[in-house]
Image: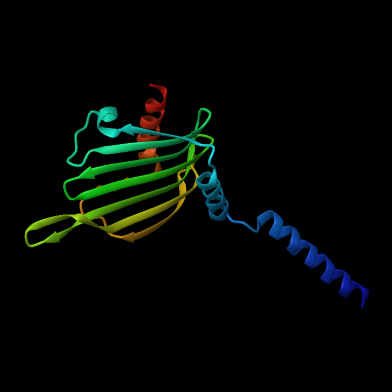
Amino acid sequence: MLPHILKKILVTIFILLGFQTFGQNKVDRINDEVYSIEKNDTLKLSEYNWTKLTGIKTDGGGILNVWQNDNQICKIVEEIGVSYGRVKTIMYLQNGLPIKIIETEENFERTEQGFNHKKLNEVFKVIIHVLDWEMDEDKTRQIGQRVLSEANCAAYDYISIIERAKKAITQ
C-alpha cells in the first residue's frame, strides 16, 4: 500500500514540477513577452517617415514606428501605403532579436468605378512566432492569401526592417 501511495505522490510532484518548468511552451512565452511589451507604458514611441528613410516613394507613403526602452528596440511597426491598399508589418523584439512578426496585406474594396479608398479589407495575414532566430525556427500561421504583396522566404528577410529602425533612432 505504501509504495502505491508513494508512487502517486511522486507522480503528482513530477507533474507539478513539470508544469512549472515546461508548462508554457515557447509560443506561450513569446505571447507573454508581447503582452508585456504592449502593456509597457514606459516605452518611448518615435514615428518616422518611411519614404525619407528608404528613398522609396509609394502611392500612399509610409511610416515606421519604433518603441524603445533606453537603447533597446522592443517593437517596430512598418506601414506602407500602395495603390491597391496597405502592407503592414509588426515586429516584437527581445534582446534585439525578433520574437513575433505579424504581416498583413489590406486591399481597397474594388467597385465598378475602381477602388473605394475608404474601405480596406484584410486579405492576408501571417503570424510568425520566432522560436529560434539563429536556427531560423519558427511557428507560422497564415490566414488568407496574398493578392499583390510579395512573400518573404525566411524570418531573416525581415532584418531590413530592424536595420531601418536602428538607422532611424540613431539619426
